[in-house]
Length: 248
Image (cartoon, rainbow, N blue to C red; front, top):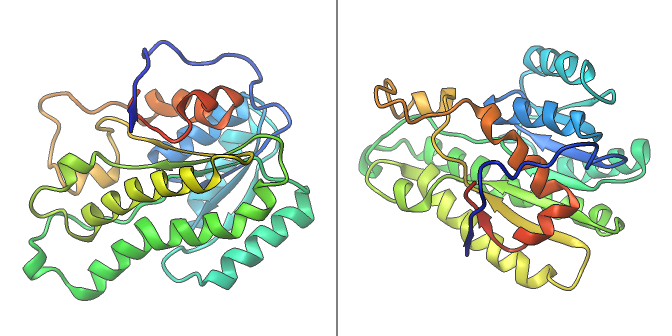
C-alpha cells in the first residue's frame, strides 16, 4: 500500500527528543543525511556501517548538530544472526532502549542479466538487501517492543522499476522487502512497533551511479532532500504511514 504527502510536510523541532535510533548504511548518501537530520531532531543516533573511516566522518558531522552519536561497525554481508543479537544486547546494555531502526544499507554491483550474474554476487545482494535487514529487525524487536512508540523503516527502491531487466538480486530483494513490510505490519499491528517503508525518488548516490552513467535529465535529487521524511517516519507522526510505503 503506498502513501503520499506534500513535499513541504516536513516536521520541525525536537520531534525525536529522547529517542534512540539505529541507522544502517549510515555512511552512505541517505544514511548520513538521515543521521544528521535525526540528531537535529533530538535523537541519539547509532551509526552502523562497515567502513570505519567514513563512519568517523559522519560521527563528527552528527555530533556537531545534536546528541553524541554511537558507532557500531558491522559488515552486514558477513554478520551472522548471532552478531545481530549481540548488537541488540549491547544497545540495551549501553543505552537501555531503542525507539527506531532505519534500514539504508544496500548492495548493488550494477546492471547484469540474470543469466550472466555471478552466483556469489546474486546471493550477496539478496542477503544484504533482504535477509540481513530481517535478521537485524528480528534481533531488535524485543527491545523495540519495550518502547511506547517505536518504528522500523525500510528504505526501498521502486519495485516496478527494478523489476525490469538486469536488476538481478537487488531488484528481487526490493520485491521481497515490499512483501515483508506488509507481512510485518499485519503481524505487529496491535503492538507498539510500527512498520513502514520509504521509497525515495532518484538520488545522487554511488548506488545510482552503478546503474546510470549520468543524470542528464536532472531527475536525481540530493539524498538530504529525503532526510526529513526519515525523521517523520521515525517520529510519532509516522503513525499516519503505518503499514505503508511512503513516496514523499
